[in-house]
Amino acid sequence: MIKVSSAAIIGNNAVCVDIEVDVRTGLPSFELVGLAGPAVKESRERVRSALKNSGFDFPIKRIVVNLAPADIKKHGTLYDLPIALGILAAAGQFEQKILQKFLIAGELSLSGGVRPIHGVISLAELASKCNQAVIIPKQNAKEAAAANNRVYPISSLKQAYGFLKNMIKIKPIRRQKYLPKTLKPGFSGIKGQSIAKRMMIIAAAGHHHTLLVGPPGTGKTMLAQSVINFMPPLSYNEAVETTKIYSNAKMLKPQVSLINKRPIRKPHHSISLSGLVGGGNPIRPGEITLASNGLLILDELLEFKSSVLQALRQPLENRQVAIVRANQRVVFPATFLMIATTNACPCGHLGDPYRECRCSIQQINRYHKKLIGPLLDRIDLFAYLQPLTLDDYNEDSDSPVTITHQPQKNGLLTDEQVQNIALSQSVKSLLDKAQKRLRMSARGYYKTIKVAKTIAELDNTQIEPQHISEALRYRWEALNLF
Image 1: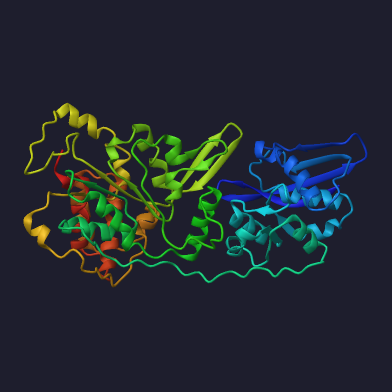
Image 2 (image 1 turned 90 degrees about the vertical axis):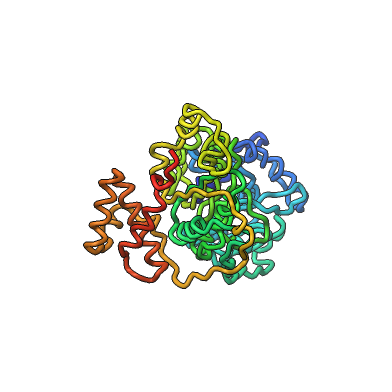
C-alpha cells in the first residue's frame, strides 16, 4: 500500500488527508472511498485518462483508493494529482519514501496537464507546519510561496513524475516581497457633512462600527465608501488571512501572491441569511467573512430582513462566525468594520427641515424595530446627516486629510482591557454623570471609553473630558430623532 499526503479545506484552514492507494491482483476495478464528494468521485476517469495520455500504463488490476480520515467530507478536484502519483508508486514506478517529503495537490486534465486549484495557501501553510514541501500547479505557485519556502510548481503529470524520479530539476518558488497598497486619505467629491466626516476618520482609525442616518441625497453611501481611505494598510498577517479566505472561496485569481489591499463588500439588502453569514454545501464563507480585515457596507440597513440583521450580533461581538451542521462545525473569521446607512423613516424625511415626513408613528416604530436592541448596542458611532446647503456645495471637498497619529484598533478591545485603561478623576466623574443621565448599559459605558481613547490617540494625548464629551456626541441618544 502507498500513502500520499494531501489536504482538505475546512473553514479557513487545511487539515491533513492521507491518500492510501492499494493495487492488487483481482478483477479489474477502480474504487474510491472515504466520504468523497461528486467532484472527487469523478477523479477516477480523469486519472485513468491522464495516466494513459501521459504515456503510462494503467494497471489492469483491482485499485482501491482511500481518503483518510473517512469522517471528513472531501470536495473539489485537488486529489487528482496525488491519486495518479500514488497509483504510479503502487505500480513500482518510484519509492514511497520520496512521496513522504511532499504535500501534493492538483487537478488533472484528460491529456495529463495540471490545472489550478483553490485554497493553495492554506495547503502550503499546513505543509510548512508539517515540515513538508509542496507540489502544486504552476498557476498557484506564487500564492503557495507566501506560506511555504519549498514550493515546486508543475504543469503536467509527466513533469511531476520526472521530478520525483530525479530525472528533471525544478527550482522552488521564492516568496515575493509583500507591498501593501496605501490609499490617500480624503473625502474627494463629498460636500459638507463635517461632523460625519470627522466621525468617519474616528471609525476607520479605531475600528468602530458606525451608523449614518439621514434623508436621501445627503451623501451617506459616499461617506461609507470613503472610510477605506483612512484605514491603515493591510499588514502581512492580515494579507495572509484575507488571501486564504478568498482562495478557499474560489475568488482568488491565478498567479496572485497575496491580496495587498483591504476588501470592501457591499451586499444588497435582499441578501439571504446564508449569503451574509455563510453556509451551503459545501459550507462557504458569507459576506461578513469576505469583508474580514476590510469594510462591510450595509446600505439601507433597515431594508434587510430581521433574521439577517440579528445574525450580525455574534460576529460583531466575537469577530468570527460558527456554522454548525449535523456532523460538521466550521468557524470563519469575521473581523470586519461595519458602516451602515439608513433613512430615518420609510419615506426618508424624518428630521429633514425642508421636507415633511408623512409616516405615522406606527410606521416609524415598525421601521425602527429591526434596529432597536442588542444590534444597536454593538454600534459605536451614530450621526444624522442634514441636507446640504448652498455653502456646502461651494466648499472645496478635494483637499487631503492629514492624520499625524495612527490610533490602535480600540473598537476591538474587550471589556477587561477597557477596565485597565487609566482614567483621570475628571474623566471618571463625567462618565458617571453620563451613565446616570443616559442610563447606559455596561457595553455602552465601555464603548464610550473606547471611542474617547481613539479620539485622544488622534490628538496624541491621554483621555481628557473633551474626548469623552465628543464620544458622547456620537451616541444614539444624541440623534434626538425618535
